[in-house]
Image (cartoon, rainbow, N blue to C red; front, side, top):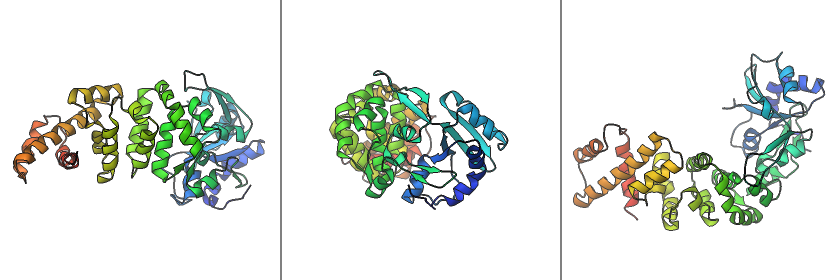
Length: 349
């Protein structure tokens, strides 16, 4: 395996932790999104990470806690039964998780987790090869048994194990695939594409909350279109937003680039429904009352703007301000500006 220098300053920060694990006879590796993003050049190595540094080890949780205790100013062990110990060591916030293997029941995406001793087995359970890369904290060696670094260079999305296994075990990974395709400008491997079509129905075992969370993350990337097209291509779109017509989904998809506002992108996806239908679908997806009301207010105000514009080519500011009042006391001031944008987009329907 290669010895990499891209992580030099991070490994220096982690050196005290690496030393105590090494002296106790344990492995310790940096994993997760930071490894991927540094290799992609999306973040500069050495920058202070916005979240915890994810580490993985063959040490069991109680051993990790004991090794971290002399170094840490704070320890969090709420995740110990799942193998994770959190700690603040100097300025570094870390989460140390024991190597794991997983097995899934056919009707659940919640795995039975077993602690393990093998890094490769642990990496094999990750969702995609680009997330299955580790860097040894003690040696700086890049551990990449599934070719994730090559996939990053090729802008290719694959799963460590076969995609049929991956998507049957956890169908939410199909929605994550859409997000990664859009976020990192990746091409899905043909086997992954085929598996998504074959196992789309498995999304039915995923909770509405988790589906909604993944949809919101997808809508938040710079250009969601490659991801939303992936969902449509494999029959997943109508499972994400129940009852949405393919033409309505396609229209929304083609117009996402016209706004970066999450509220507007969400409203576009629900714009083909009647108000009661839109409310029912938002509630079924467990959107918060606030998010549901914002979406419905946007759709209602956009319809009002369009009606007004059909009578006045250039409505006055006073006319538009009256629309704010029509939204009700709970309406947020910025909604009117967003509604005007939404109305302009919907004029092309």
